[in-house]
Image (cartoon, rainbow, N blue to C red; front, side):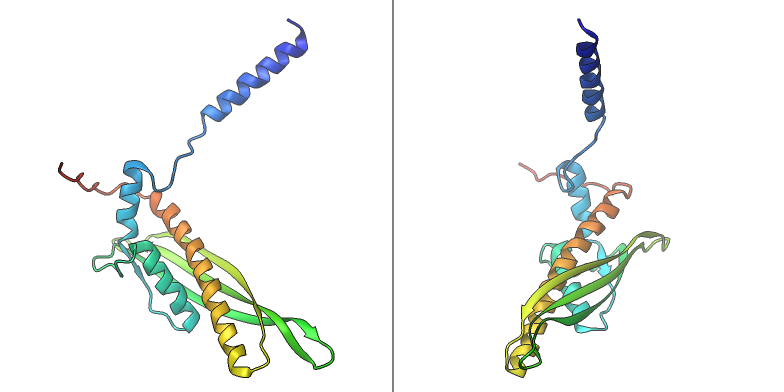
Length: 181
């Protein structure tokens, strides 16, 4: 064999060995996924102080509980705060009004274990929603609120994934027993 073929073979074997050492697995799959779902149902969210924070909180409660509502026996606390900023993008020079804008929702969160108050995860997430500004003032306010709700849903989905990743690193809880056949 020539040197170039030997080198290519060695590189191929090194690549295969490197890929074999990867431990990629689905976040919600298998027994680990069952344990993670149980942990996600044990989250309690802080009281919201703004309408945008309430949108994010409501969506997170829905995502983490599967629509069952907030946990009654929470083992983890999530401190959550969120705010929105709306800005004008396209300025009409003739009327000095904007025809389009964007709303940016920013949310900060901190996940703590209740038993020892250990901080497990923290972060700041943002999402942007674009909107058109109608000429009527009430319609404009409604468009801004709709954009805040859309961006809040997106932020909540990102935070939900962050919480799942943090809880997946936690030691496993007792797994629920499989259903009887």
